[in-house]
Amino acid sequence: VTPDQVRQVVAAAVRAPSVHNTQPWSFDVESDVVGVRADRSRQLIAQDPEGRELLLSCGAAAFHAWLAVRGLGRSADLAWLPEPGDADLVARVTAGGREAPDDSVRRLLAAVPLRHTDRSAFAAEPVSDEVVGTLRAAAEREGAWLLAAVGPDQEVLVDVLASRADALLQSDDAVRHELAGLVSPRGVPAEGLPYGALPEHGWGRGSSLPLRDFSPAATSGPIVTEPPVAEHPLLLVLGTPDDTPADWLRAGAALARVLLLATAEGLVANPQTAVLEVPALRARLREELGLAGRPQMLLRAGWPTGPGSPHTGRRDLADVLTERSST
Ligand SMILES: Cc1cc2nc3c(=O)[nH]c(=O)nc-3n(C[C@H](O)[C@H](O)[C@H](O)COP(=O)(O)O)c2cc1C
Image (cartoon, rainbow, N blue to C red; front, top):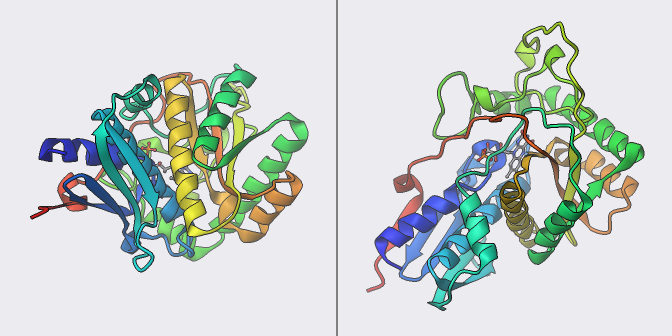
């Protein structure tokens, strides 16, 4: 892998979604091997004390790196936690012999620069069962599962749990402080969330699933006189058989694959993790939906109505990439 190709691979990796755009990763590259390291200094201690969401984010970046190596026309092997003594080396992507990228790789790779979290209201058209089936298969390829919460019973259940989670987190000073530190009032910052990417609150938005409120001090959005059309996003729960660090990494890879495929299909999506950050509510979600494993992520997805939320920034490659010579 040449130095230019290394930069291409890492540039694709950092476009991965990460919890509130914390980008908790770094990359160590030596000839044909890309090591993905967790950067624990970027962990959100109040919201993510176990580092579950940090590893989901790293798993997503590792999947993007794997995809980009395949895009170079090489075979690629993705190994999770390859060194038992080094818990922060979370993944290793090794480029092998020549292997032309297939259509699926090409499609997902083309979606990398287009994918972004969209918190704006979605169109009313439902997402077909056929599309949901392809997303489910994408999650399963990475060792995870995906379940659509359908019908009023399940939709109301998710709504109630997600709303309760948001209210509980909003009443926790440490979480509020952490969230406030992640939002930039102007411009597109290199990390964290630009104000324009956040959902509108107050009277401006009707939805069957409320979105996390990032601005508790300024809840009153612009008051609109026309009542908004309530959206009914597709609600997807992504999960894994167990709840180990390896499961969290696989869930991140599955999340990345599902989001890229959704983008390729023309869908937009928004990960929602508040309900998974409150252990009692996470357990309720699991029990009430009769889930066989552990839920790792809630996603709202749907068809876009406009340009959607702006893209978020990324740190410079120089800040996250270390290239080692193999001699
Ligand atoms: C583990 C994880 C948790 C996330 N949780 C939320 C969330 O609760 N609410 C939300 O609006 N976005 C959430 N996101 C989306 C991130 O904010 C988003 O990926 C990040 O800001 C980068 O922006 P992009 O996805 O547009 O590239 C989450 C993403 C990940 C990977």
